[in-house]
Image (tube, rainbow over the protein chains, first blue to last red):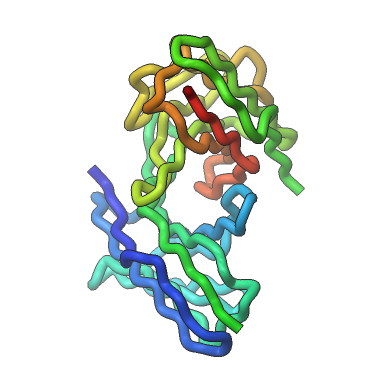
Length: 114
Length: 111
């Protein structure tokens, strides 16, 4: 079945550092790809998405490019802030019984130190 | 804004008790989902529903059931809670664009 693999965490960086969180996927067909973020004590919220190959999703300074040739969707940010500390989940969409459900990676906990 | 509301943020139950987790969404979404979240395992789909009174098993349905009597409400039921069901439970809803909208989660502890 479809699956998503994220880089293992936790990841700890200093403020203004460059961030990369790796995500690769296995899927039949052409899924949409997503990054969700979970801040402490909250539910998940959509950070960005891409629906087809070579699309770039971006939001809040984060970017990810849908790379079909490498089956990857790595999350990047040029200069992280303390407020970016959260758990990040990569996900792909899978259609089941006409409904799009998401398959998630295991999550990567990011801590940014001042 | 879409709002998905889960009835309880924290619950403590005893082994063998019947547990109800309620979820309500206010955006007329067709699809609703229950996931559980465990450290190192990410989110795993328990059940989902694509219409009223319709339900489909996800990846880990054992020990759970669901009910969707109205479009806006999707309930997760643990018929006889066990300690291995201690977890964070997340409800979500969506249209068919793929984007899920999540509630804040219900942290269940089974003693």
